[in-house]
Image (cartoon, rainbow, N blue to C red; front, side):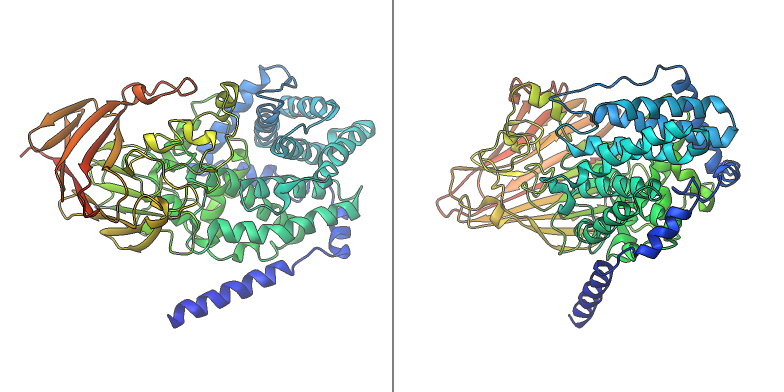
Length: 611
């Protein structure tokens, strides 16, 4: 206990020190005197990028960048486009992707065609009447795109073009971020990371024109980033919004550190925020043995590679944070014309420290977020072979940002198959077009929970009379080891039961037991459900068997009262706003509640391996 208190005190001290950091007038004047380019590089970036492109990983990265850039040369300048209720994000992100790839391709090759195309994209964006309608992310990503192009192409611009673009950055970007109602400024989610990073990049780019404004913008970022980083990474690196949003928020967060280091020679202590130096462990823990990600909340099962993966591996000397799946994702990029991986070209600055092959020698079999995180997870695995068992357990609350009704949920893999799924998210824009009004509201009666993928019907959870979980409840992971995870779900089922505890055990033979124990149940039926897309589901006298590609998983159940199996095609549970879910099934074991109100139920998942 004493060690925990000492660690906590140190973390508070570090955070307080970072809060006191700020940019001085003298430091801004020094940046303002720096010639362009000054974003991520001092002087021409060509030498560094070309040197790194000769390394094994750098060669792949450069090939991916050039593939994208060559494709962009064949496309017209991006027209301004609004999507889904005055959102400009699709447009902004496309411009950013084009500009980063074209700029880096230009530096790698010296081919002026790339520079001229990036310039055309920048000038077209600068001439647009506004970059911000309803969602400030739209403006942030466009501001970053134009600022990078302005800074790197500065010597290729006429005085009139410089004035046009710099004024656009200042008026349409920086000054709009100071308008009233910008809630993201002090928020603790990915918006805070993305928007402050983009504005800081813009401030550095135009510091010679607006030094006082630049200092204000950068100091605002230094004031608010410690809080969002503390929430996002303490104390064991777990990102509350899941691995998919980790990529978004952390890519930008790492870019901010890189920008500050290059411009000021320091990152003002942001890299010392508790847990930031462990966040690569979180990403490794979230990659299953099938190569898919633990897709809880609003995340998808895909595993990509981005700026943050490479930056962090170099920053903290942890090349083992690049898993085999990251290397595979990099190889896959070389065959794609467009990837949406907007910041990836900038990773070439940091790719010099990466090994030719992945090294998993330091990767632990288990990972746990720890008791202080507001969204808790734990992962266990029997080994790192594709056929070994992998188990991901989700705690936390449905009311968390981007949260689903998945408290106490899990995913399960063995023999190279993901048997128990978390389907992931639905497209927000499509849901809004189909009439979902309160999509970002986590109240108990919110429209959000009517969506199959977001609500209780699709998740691998416990249910009482098929009711929803309590959205303000919190599933606390009370203990975790290499073979067992325990979760207290009392508040998640408040009003439905007195106590609810769920325990997961990874057995030596690769089987997994999920045990639920409830007291004071106020209902007639308790069910433990899970989602699967196994090709075949076979009913047996003592349970069911899932089959896929010649692999089999036997699922059995025991309970304190009689129970029965139910298998329902997911398609039958959908509403008009839901997507198809073809081939997916919700399987549940349902137990009648005795008069005592006490129920115990154990499901066992056993890989069937023919001798």
